[in-house]
Length: 465
Image 1 (cartoon, one colour):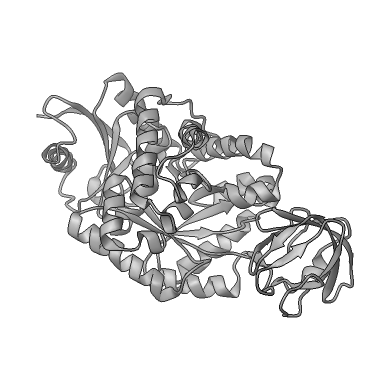
Image 2 (cartoon, helix red, strand yellow):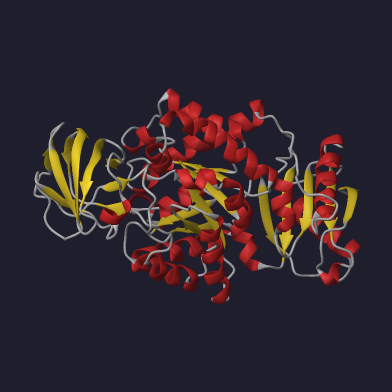
């Protein structure tokens, strides 16, 4: 979200074209700007009966340079420049960095990348106090507030900065559905954030943004700790060799599906459409391949926040996704689970897997589930069933949060008189909404006794009357 997509009529058109989740980037904008967008989204959800979720994306320990003199500074290959932690206006002699312990954390010969890797420097020496001397390896024009990446450096900044904690407080007050944590390095980073959310009494779920080599090293622990993952290819492609990113994307998507965690593929998906109404062929292939990799969601950034064609971008992406899913998607991709019979979720996972199997072999029109925690939705969606996945819940927070999951459509339902009555009710709701027709097969799952809202333990093959 951004200035190009903040107006209600534009956002409504985008939602009708296929938007499921709106991302608020806390790296930019003021709190009141984000609150205004949230109010607009909720107004649309209420007025048009949509279930669009909200993702508050925290900046994390993003390192930047400070202000530089007007017009930028020209860094010439082979010259030396000081990087200092004392605030100053940057020139060819020296620039300010926002990372206070930079001189203590870097070592000689480590690489420093600025402006998404366009400018590269090498550390010559550090005084361990306030100044690092660097040599320009690949120069260029450097302007104010550009980002800094340190692929070789063990960064000591915490994953949640003071600014993040302030923004997190706002996001939780506003009851957003998802919190994105940038520059995740370990599973503990996720657990620390979840503890703060829990202590606030809120139910927001967490997205781990994978964009550092350390996150790749700890990917299994991160996936285990988080509720979802974003493959943030922008910083990941700067922090790691570019050629490794495509296979890392596939690896992360596979591991997330195995763990029944949603995965978002992000960055430069339709970048050329910021200024043109048509994508490049390479971009179309990128979006399509992300779907084939098993992504739950494909994300747009500048294309919809500041681009000239926000609605056309959504329409274009939706067409690509729809075409791949209808004509080329390998539905029911093999999914392996590492959970054994001793796992507390073993039986519910077996029921969900059986529901998908039955849906495939009966050519069912839908898998219809009741859930209070959302677990069933995560599990069924991870199989990528060809049948629609319809989730009914009395937990209002889940209605919008589950919009991130592949193929899931949510409905509010809070009557829990009996299992038979509930199944009849939810199937009729789908029929009235023209999502299933008379004579269609649907697979219903629920917990018996239904009033206890326990773990899913029942399957029923029903024919819509």
